[in-house]
Amino acid sequence: MTETSSARHKIDVPRKPEPAPRPRRSMRWLVFVTVALALLMISIDQTSVATALSAMQQDLGSSLAWTGWTITAYALGQILVLPLAGPMGDRFGTRRVFLLAIAAFTVMSVLCGLSSGMVQLIVWRLLQGLSGGVLLPTATGIIAAEFGRDRDRAIALFSTVFPVGAILGPLAGGIILTVASWREIFFVNVPVGVLLVCVGRALIREPPRAEVAGVDLVGVGWLTVLLLSGMVAITRIGALGDGWLGPASVAAASVVSVVAGRYLLRHLHRHPNPIIPPRLLTGGHLGLMNVMNVLFGAAVLGFAALVPHYAQIRYGTAPLVAGGLLTVRAVFMIGSSGVAIVLLRRLGHRPLLIAGLAAITVALALTALPPLLGGPAFWLSVGAAVLGLGMGLAAPASNNAGMHLVPEKASAVSGLRVMFRQTGSIVAISVVTAVSSAAADPAAANTVAFFALAAVMTAATVLAARIPNQRGRW
Image (cartoon, rainbow, N blue to C red; front, side):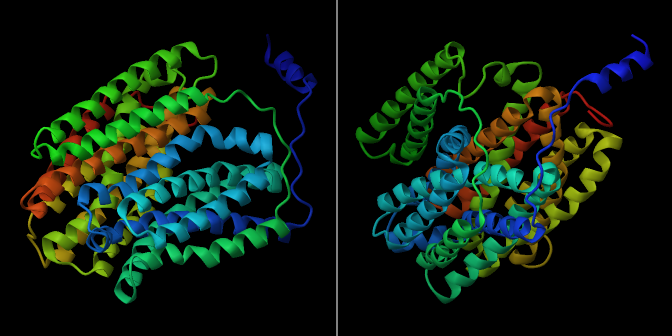
């Protein structure tokens, strides 16, 4: 076919018209601000809780291993609800599901703040994670409907919300712990949540509903059993010395985890619309990407959850200063991510990915070493800054690398990336808190953990070197 005939063919093919944006520009942006504030609320909550691990552990009289579940249970809730959020919006209405998720998140925040024991707090945090995990997919659907053909720019602005939350959350958590207690970290969500529900009801329109595809509830069930039993097995490692019950509980939870994993894999190959498409697990170089994302989540997201507690138990750092380490990380991450975006088309994603992962490896080793320059706060800030630089280079490159491998499945690959990174963080936090809880010297155990995370990132860097590079557009 000649160029002329090809062009004529493209003109003759009818194209589906792009949806028009909402007529009033001011209303579109009011809706955007409302939705962005909801995402900012869950982002701040996620990072501020990390500063309160020591306070919650002391107040509720729990071990560090179980206290760490306040973070891992939240991440687990987000993982489990990701495959369900879209179909829920299509079936019941995106606006309705979005507002109900905010209301549920607000109620769970109240219950978290009122918890009298660690078991209660973990249950409410799991449910809070479920409601928070619904917000991002439904928020994207709302903005897409409001902005129509201009939706790409509006959705791109969402990328600024979570970095802002990463900056504000640790500072907010540190300030609240300085003047009040860990409970107020949850209570501050209440007025914001109530306001968002009221404003959202008045401003947000119901987006058009799409055809609802089948939801793999059985797959979600097996994934739940797999992750929960794995978390229990890791947490109970600290009880191995408690007579026969300790080893028995670890063995039982491990057996359940292995059986659940086996049945999940078998189910994925049999279900017509599985929660995780099997070819996206290992096809092409996706297996390498998935393993690398697990390792990335273990080191990077694990760092975010553990470093404030580490600073407090090793150096006696104040909560505000300990939380500020995550703010330093976020600031440097935002700066270097802008550089990475500019360089992606020129260099491709592989060089940036390798450089970023190498920087993260160095940052974790610096965090584990005793201060070689300045005091503990300054030295830990250096480690946090280097880690932020590495994250800013690696994250955009990793996102592009995965989607380049299967461009027609970009949405599914993006969801898997989030799931595998959160899974890595759950494993890392569970292992580190369990070992630290059982150790005679928790600070020394945490130090070893950061060296181990550095080794994990070394392995991720080696894997990144085997991923095909891509320059220019794709």
